[in-house]
Image (tube, rainbow over all chains, first blue to last red; front, top):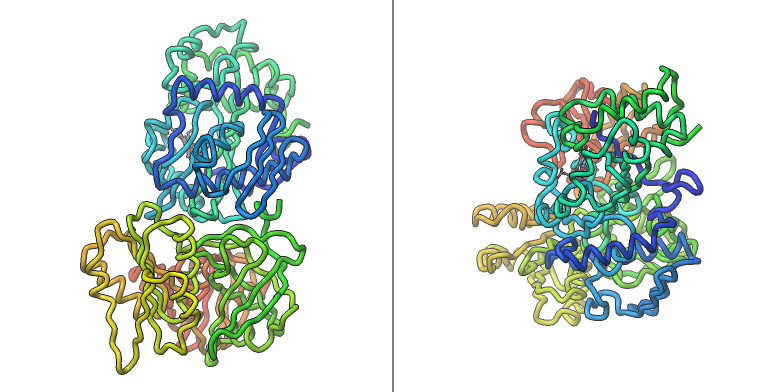
Length: 311
Length: 324
Ligand code: HEM
Ligand code: FES
């Protein structure tokens, strides 16, 4: 069942995805190539309403400063007044631009930097005691669409989610988010499932991936069914007072997941007790029973250790 | 990574500059020599002042150069009859001193959808307005700035502002002999204007009332209130969850007394505006003296909630039990 699972985004374990504010991993270059291809085909995956320019520069600054500090071997940032030089070695980029002057970049500031950052990004304007999805770049999503949600507020874009509204979860979550402060980012994990290791499960491309759900059989669960975990973080943007919401997606097959006995056992229990509304909403209905049956061998009623890390 | 993630900043008072008879400017640099976190128009920091056995924490608007990450500046008006924060800054803090300050917090941010920004400052309320004007200049957005003070001598930064902003800047004297009114200004604005006001209670209430009557959308009226916590007779508190019994002194706020006892409720503005410190009241004797702008009149009357950053308990046998 859903909960308001929010915690400070502080470093946890060396080598884990929680070590640095923005995780860069071995899929970096290929995911960035993928993003460029998706954007070529469908430019509406990246949008920014006119009043979101300041928030775009905030986003660029946050990601550049963070990556240059965390991964100095890959990224460097040097500043001479408002003249900035950004080097991204894995992608072969060495650009000089004037901070704050969009005409000195090949794209708007948000698009420029998020074409070089793994994960999707929503940039929220904060006003009238609400958050508004007024900019973003979304190419690796779990069946929602930026083009549909652009301009909506927190309650509007969450409208399709079952049960959580009635539990008061979104009210409490919004109150928390409105008060996220500069210097104190927060995070939460969200999950769903995907057939095959496909990052782009967008409504725009439903015709390409929707039918995969019908290809699961009791025999192929291990290799076909993937757990999809999103690391979502929340950042106050100091120039615009907006909020940045990066969604970083990680996929793992049932086979690989169950090689960690604790994970196989836990997922069996979570899927087994998932309310029908959530099975339907997450799109698991056609293959969840086969998956639960496949995972049952990992659950002997044992106790599992606290936390998400392997024992 | 300290500019991106962190809690507090260890700062050195690099310089103290007298601005008017009763206003001094304090410039802070980071102790480790690095950069300060970015801030924008309307942001404030909370300065911690170790005053005897207590720590005072006062919010001050940032008003240095928003493009210069090497330092922060604040301007402090000395309130002689106040509880002590501004007196401490004026009398005890010396150049070279070390002070702890918070990351910037912005409860008075610009509305980016505005077609025009109308900035109105009264007296020391000029400080957040200065950084807002800088932000607007930097982004080349249309704005107009009005500064109201009792006299030219009392108006901090008057010359600088009029030079920097030229015809965007307007100064008005308001005293016994000269009753400048904000109403005509508010009633002659193009659709899509956002108004920002910081200054004395009366001025801000005036702005809110006029805009409300004229049918301005609530989201276009931005008010920065920094109430100083009220002083009053001492009283006692019981913290139910933390099982502590404490006394709130005459010149101390309930929040400061709770912090002194080692319990740390969340806060942002320390001025009764943001709602962060909201605390459930279990029971009380005497009367609750609410000074905040956050709780509704019904909530205040219910006696179930209090904002400990500014409110107190008064009357006979004043005592309160809090859910903390
Ligand atoms: C401002 C930041 C956030 C953004 C931009 C965002 C965006 C979204 C979007 C686009 C969806 C998909 C809705 C659909 O089906 O069309 C979603 C789902 C959801 N969101 Fe958020 N969200 C945010 C913050 C949060 C927070 C803080 C919570 C905390 C409880 C939360 C809880 C959920 C839940 C439970 C779902 C359903 C997910 C599932 O079961 O797969 N969201 N969100
Ligand atoms: S801290 Fe803002 S209302 Fe008390």
